[in-house]
Image (tube, rainbow over all chains, first blue to last red; front, side, top):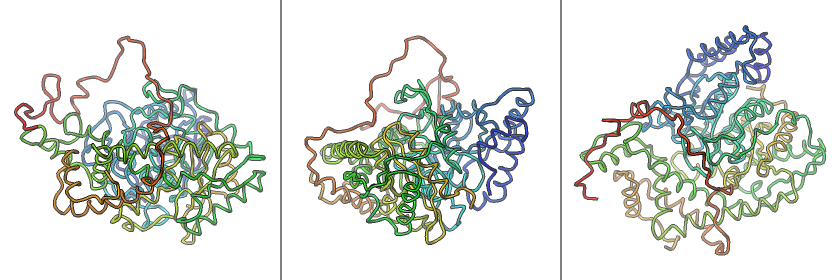
Length: 480
Length: 102
């Protein structure tokens, strides 16, 4: 069940033909009915959302235009700071902390008339691919409660899939928006690095992290990205340009567009039912006038190894700040060092500890060149190989996830097996390039499959045109 | 410095100390092979000859971004300190530092 598209909700609320309060009440009714099973949220902001909806309705009654997201319920991944409201990263170490400021994306959504309905569950500090690493228990896939929703933004993906919110925000460091979007049958976008301000996104791996939208359809995703994109002086890595125009290009089609299927990410290790849908997607694009050929991006096969050195290295540095001094929980100790050790030992879960140790090791004396330095050079190779491919192609295509959603518990005992979920999504983060997952068909088990569209830096408009054609070929978004 | 040397339990214990984490014996037993497997997977990039390739630290060409040096409002100090585990006299309060071994 869904509450309808964000685009329609905003149009109706702005026109005064539907009240924001009624929309929010529908969302909260869906939450009441299924949240106990799904556990998409760490925090549901029912009273605050109703009050915000009433305020939107009052403005409409007063002849004002609340903005392009008027009355649209939005869920926020719980690693986005919300002033005065608990922001946990699904970690014990931040339990009870209330940030003194809003993330820039939150400010923009509220300024556009959007209504924040809750903070969604994630793998602790966004480290994981199943949302099972949350300190507050896993989220379940709304399509099949025995399956994971993917991760790390599993709560946001599940919230949109279950109709708890029309839109959601996630963060994507190695696939954490796109993979859960694929597994939950929704659209998920990782924008170009720097397109969306990271101010107020709690850092995991700063050279890879990027905030992006989840939506039930391509147009809604474009709408939300337009709202949150654009320069922000609070983020020194923010690209100094205005938000791109995306909704207006969705009907432009793909006639004459050159599409390359990445051969290195479309063979070994990818399930046959996922590959079948990838090729069906390619055929749909050809029918729409695109020229589809095989593309080679050889260095992408080294992406996983490079990522699992670079991301933990950056994480070990970023997470050094959780020392019991400035925010979050503290476990007392006789000295400052003992207090810090006791705090970190009690506050972090197993996966966060593994990544911190992996990163500390990769950066430690005697190993820096062999691990971190080498991974940075491989990152250059991946960027170079993408650049060569984009001389011949406008966009690239590959699966989002190697398989459909797997069972809870299936991969928790073996971190490396879990990491392999990210093999198709990681290269775009290393290159800083945009990529999005579009629902395309279902697997042998009836679970959703996502096809991934990749584009060069700031190639969002072309990427969205391709996504729109794939969606039109599929009639997605109405089968939950 | 040879990557194919498999990570040992002592290595993990050492790294945990550097990262200010205390691991139980059971955690050391669990984490050592898990981390060793991830590092073993990274041997595929060990074999690459990339000595002439420049490292990439960041996907965008970064430069320092300065704003004009003018005073303007920022987050309220008391609000920040209210979220800290302990504060005193407008500052974060920590246990004794002087006299520690390290």
